[in-house]
Each structure stands twice: as structure tokens, then as C-alpha cells.
Length: 137
Image (cartoon, rainbow, N blue to C red; front, side, top):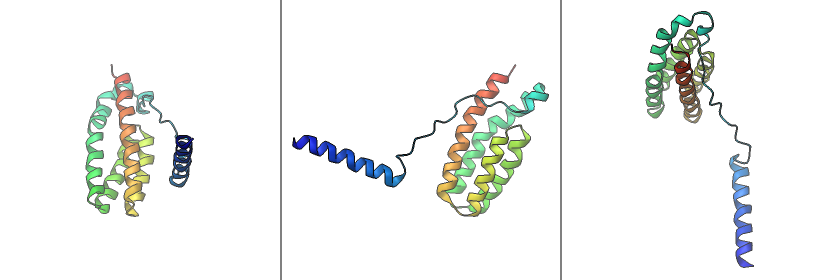
């Protein structure tokens, strides 16, 4: 009987902790599908040019993570602003959208928000790499 009460109490306390921290909400599954550049719709021959961006993209994100770690919001805002233009230019509007959010987080000195967005960009980078592999001749 005592073990049952202890288990019930532990479950109840965990439920309260999840509710307080917001972890009780359903966790959205991330899209794992390959993401292909929109440039390939009109110009499939641009794979080589896009590939250079895709290869450099993780390094760009690492540089941004360093800016976040050092709370260098001016550098991060500039890096995010550049990524906003580059992402769309290479046919990845999703990158531009997240980069715009990252720029806003930097301008607001929002370390938690910047970290979350960088995580989303890293995930997007993996999908983009898969998409490029799928598109390469």
C-alpha cells in the first residue's frame, strides 16, 4: 500500500512539474524530410553553386553559436541578417525566415530565443544536406 501511494504521489508531482514547465503540451514532431532548393525547379544545373552554401552553412551556424555564447548581439544580428539574404538567394526561404527571427532575438539580446532558433537552423541544415544529396546528379 505504501509503495502504491509513493508511486501515485511521484506521478502526481511529475504531472505538476510538466504542467508548470509547459512540458505537458504535445511535442511537435520535427519534419525530417529532405529539403530541396527552390532554385532547382527552374535551374537544376545550379547544384554546384548551392552545394557551396550547403557545405558552409553548418560553419556559419557555429560562428553564430559563438556570438551567442559571448553575448555578442551586434555580431549575431549581422550574421543573421546576412544569412537572411543568403538563405533565400540559394532557394531556402525557410532559412531566411528563421534568420529573420534570429536577427530579432539578437537585437533583443534574447539568448534563449537565439539558442532555440539556432537549434532549428541546425535541424534545417540536416534536411538541406539530405535534399542536396537527393538533387545531385
